[in-house]
Amino acid sequence: MNSEQISGLYIHVPFCLSKCPYCDFYSSTSLIALPLFMDALLKEMEMYRNKFNSFDTVYIGGGTPSLLSLQQLESVLGGIRENFDLMPNTEITIETNPADLHQSYLKSLREIGINRLNIGIQSFDLKLLRFLGRRHSLAQAFSAIEASRKAGFHNIGLDLIYGIPGQAIDSWLDTLRRAVSFSPEHVSCYQLTIESRTPLGKRYQAGEFSMPGEESQYEFFMKTSQFLEDAGYLHYEVSNFAKRAEYTSRHNQKYWDHSPYLGLGPAAHSFQNNRRWWNHRSIDKYLAAINAGHRPVEEIETLTTEQLLQETLYLGLRTKKGICLEDFKKRFDYDIFTAKRKMLDKLQEEGFISIQDGHLYPTPTGLAVADSLALI
Ligand code: SF4
Image 1 (cartoon, protein in one colour):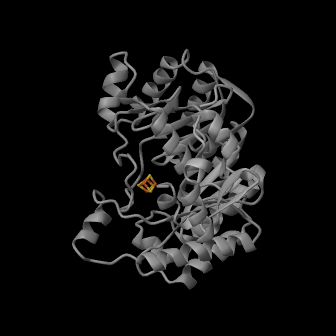
Image 2: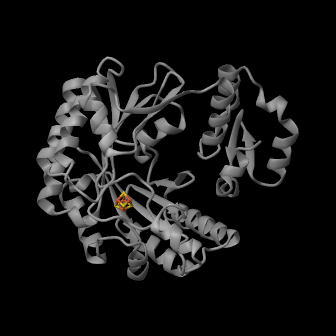
């Protein structure tokens, strides 16, 4: 970690109005504990005021933060400002469900200082939207995007999912076409993954449907990259595209370059001074710890230099800006260029990476297999 890097703040709102069957994020559909969570969150902020001073990104995620009322969000932002300094031009993002985005709510989100909106569209194909168990309709997706613009949001991200059982490439390209027709500043395209403990995972194990094979997933990935690059977007990370460099997610960048970040709320992760820690993945345990006056931390791990080195490779090879070999050498006292020369030459010949101006970059093909590339 570079100590001059400014920290990011993540808030995990652990509630959803309904549970999507593919989702493994921690959230509850019972809102009974919501008022208690709101109080606990403010107390948790106080518990960290001496450990973190200032932030230049805030990301309110979940769960579904857009189910919070305006007053509740105001209280979250008020708590942040009371306990920490927010730098000028702090990127403040909220994850939202299109069904929650009414004009007056959106206008108020802008007024309280939220300047970046992530909208969970997932698909513009109604059949697939139903398969994913989303609670919003297509009409709500369209009107949410339009209303966001009218409310004055100039930095909007659309989240989409591909590789859904039964999804044809043409249907996916149609979803992408509709997405870019709104000219969003940011698009995230996530490949559907099956997590065994989710309802979809159980249906998959019972043989109810099959998933697209590796070749098909590769085709989805490459067509996505091609389509969005042709539409003028920068493919700057495996799953992320931005209209211009200024619209890349500054908050997510902190996860990718080992900048410090504080995560508050159940299941939230934090990182500072080579230490990573995470909160209880249970609202009850989270509340109990805070009410007993403790930070609600479930576990802390200190990363060894070897672990940091491997993570830097893994994360760097998932981003278009790649890895600066000189910085890498300075940070880890390890000359990957010399130590892994043969392997790097082979990967370059096979078209997975390119080495230019002292940098190691993944090619588009390399980005498609980024997880395996990190094994070098
Ligand atoms: S709304 Fe988001 S967090 Fe909630 S269940 Fe669905 S995918 Fe998961």
